[in-house]
Image (cartoon, rainbow, N blue to C red):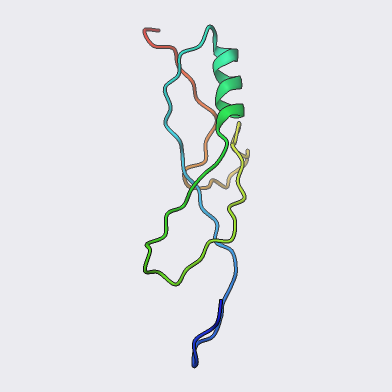
Length: 86
C-alpha cells in the first residue's frame, strides 16, 4: 500500500478484553465446557470501510480463570456456566 505524500505510517498493538455470553445444549457440564473452549474458532473486529486503519491479525485466547491477586482487569473473570432450572 503506497503512503500518500505528507503522511507517515504508524503501527503497533492494542489490547482488548471482553466477555462472550453463550447458551448451549449439552449432555453434561463437562461436554458443554469442551464445546465452548474448542469450538470458538475466530474473532472478527470490524473497521469502517472508509477508515485508513488496517488490521493485520488478532491474537487471542479464551480464559478459564482470572489471575489471582490484588490486580484485576476489566471484563476478565473466571469461566462461568450454569444449568437452566437449577
